[in-house]
Length: 404
Image (cartoon, rainbow, N blue to C red; front, side, top):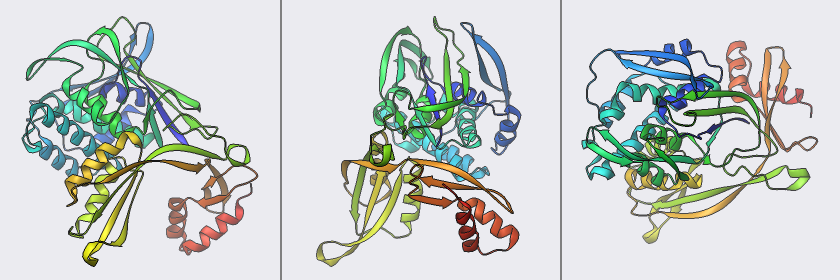
């Protein structure tokens, strides 16, 4: 499984994450072209090679050339909807800004709509967030995890005056998403709100590195200089030995470890009075918030009322946020949450040669006991449209070419 692990020995900021992803082999020029999808002007995007305590790294700098307007969650949501971004990039970007807005709202005891982002709504933060998500999409990352976060101490000047470190917004995000952290004997900000929110929304786990084969290592440099290298490392590769980012551990199962386990939480609510049109939007919000799966089941409630049971499968770090979305977007006044364990077959990919080019096949289980194979839908649909062949026949033909 294509995977990425973010090693954060010196902390995490939006520009560090973006720089580390670029250093995994992406073209800065191509990323800049994609960033033009955003209706944003008045900035200059610069990528440079720097050295931090002797270590080479990429550093991203966004320099404003024009005065930027004050932005709140509504204006940023409108900005993202105007851009021709993919659903993944748009929804994850929205989820990051929503996490930032919730943190600020709790800190200042204000409604979400009254929160102005100040530094967090500046063009550099928008570019860091959207650029990082574009980079993840360009790298084809399917599983993302990160190390626990190191926190510095001291004070920092902001638009609201001096605030203690870690910044209140950073600490709120760490609390909400249950991100493991530890203290550093260092005066200075190591984890920014943008960095914390990006990791919270995109990472499935915060743990020691999973078992993986590393293909590329990207180094992203921060703007500050510390006694140690102020860098973040992106390890890009593939998971092995049934490893999953949620635990970093494989459990022995049948047939030499074909089965492995990952912790899971199940969130459920029974709803009998919600406008049916809202369920589609609820689905979008839950997946943007990191749900692994969501499904609706018809049920009968008291007084024989027809109702819908909403079931959400989530990583433990995401369950609190997903529960909040359920309360915000539906008429339920509560939900059930219970721990569970997901038992999975080890997964992988193979390719077969066809008259129309290579086609990916997803496999579950290891040789010689492949339990399930599935031709890649997108590859088969492309061939069906280009050649005018029924899709089911392409599925049958591609499946017949697979040999364990």
